[in-house]
Amino acid sequence: MASVAFTAEMDKQRGVTPRTKVEFIDKDANVTDVTANYLGGANFEQVRERAPDEIQAGQFDITMSNETNLFSEYVPGSLLYGVDYHGAKIRISQGFLLPDGTLEYEMQGVLFIDQLKTDPVSSRVTLRCRDLLWKIMDQKLHARPDSEIPVPDSGNVGDGVVSGVAKLPFITVNETWTVTCTTPGADGVAQFSVSGSISGSIGPATSGTEFISAAKGIRFTIRGGATNWSAGDKFIFLLTQSPEWDGVNAGKIIWSILTGYDWDSDTQEAFADSVFNLDHTQSDANEDLDYEAFATVISIIDSIGVFNLKGYIPYDSDAVQYLQSLIVMFLGSIYTGNDGRIKMTTYVPSFTPNFRTFSDTAQIMQLSYSRGIDEVINHVSVDYKGSDTWPWLSEELTLDGHFVNQDDTSVADRGQLSQAFTIPWYSTGGNHIQDFASKLISRYKDPPLNIEFTTRMDALLTEIGDRAIVEDSKSGLSGIIGEVTRIVKQFDGTPASIQMRLRQDSTTNTLFGAIGSEEDEGDGISPQTDDYDTATTTDKQFAYFSKVGGPHPPQYSVF
Image: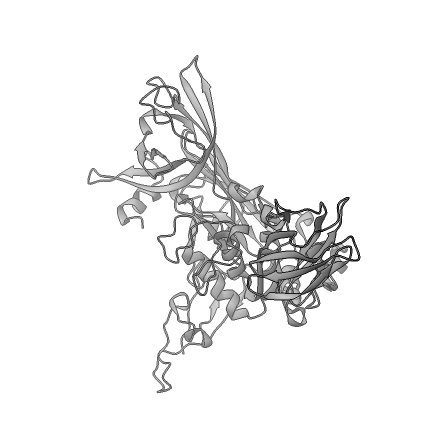
């Protein structure tokens, strides 16, 4: 938390010079201050895409002096000597010399090193750094393990194979299967026992005929070879549970994908090896994820009540594709915060937002704005999982539900501006799709106002997803509230500056409400808090009225 003195320095229009601190953090979390070697770079861009189903990671290049061989990986004593520095971190902080003579810094970015380039002529190195989201951008989920491929026992006489192994979502569990020949012979004659380490014996299989047990989620075919099967020939293989969720909050599914842990029980998922293993600590001590941000989104989704989903991840699926298929349903965003941790937001604004005003009478140096019809969505078509029936993982998932929604007024005014979505998730009655399509059109039916402006250090504590207020006399902008969707931090410029984009959509000024009470009515659940964001789940059955509009933060009426 920034001190009052820090905030005062940050808000000064001129006469203050920000200080940059650069730290190298190795994989053992050892921190070395390398500010003295900093030459330039570390200009960091973060974007929340306009499209409601895109994720974008951040990156920067930073140039460091290497005259002392501090970054020479082949020189003993170097920070990089004999260590794997790919995946080590660079932490950038900005701060001020306070009136009492102390230095105070606030983190602005924590990124991972993924490339080093040397310049021996000028004794410099340039480090390319990427944020934590890059670790998931090009990754696959649910890679098929080698253990699921049946391998013949070394003592087998028959030289046939077991192929076509498949599993069934919501049925298959982590289980070792043993297939043993009990009646020798060729295809059509040879018989095999089929036994699971959990299920026990589930009946004979015949060579040459596909064996299927939908009740146990196993399917395969035994095929004879040139030499007939002999009694005792066998195959052993493991089937693993798919990453799957049945009636689970969409935000909790995202947590599970990123950490491999169940949100409610904080226990490791049976499919943890098939997803990511980021820190699962459910507190602010989490090093990878902003736990409080996730908890807020999950609470909001719970209150809406239509995003308890059923679905699974097939083999070798793009991680980004499945994360996007979830965040789009609550018009959310996943991005990296100033502290390097992954954050998540939803379309419902906080009831106590950290509004900050940026004004040409303060620190705005230049400003422009635009509106474009190319950013309008007034017609939505969604293919989704409409029935609670699920194919074998060897078969393609059929999206048997279809939903269309549009805003008739916007279509009449501007023509049909469509966007199509495929959502591989199921909920009873398709409520998740109807809610999503309605809110999407409500938000994007009109051309948004995009305000681009450059300010000085008064935006150091502003992050993607924050709400802010912009005022500019030349443009006639007064008390315009929007969402911060782009930040470019240029710390090596003169003067140092921060470029921002503020976006105002159709629903930026929206009335939200929930009832609350400061009186104790004797019902055992009173009084309620006067702050929605600190309210308990029980409190949130009641209400706080708030209108986002004008130059002031929301006002509360508590009954």
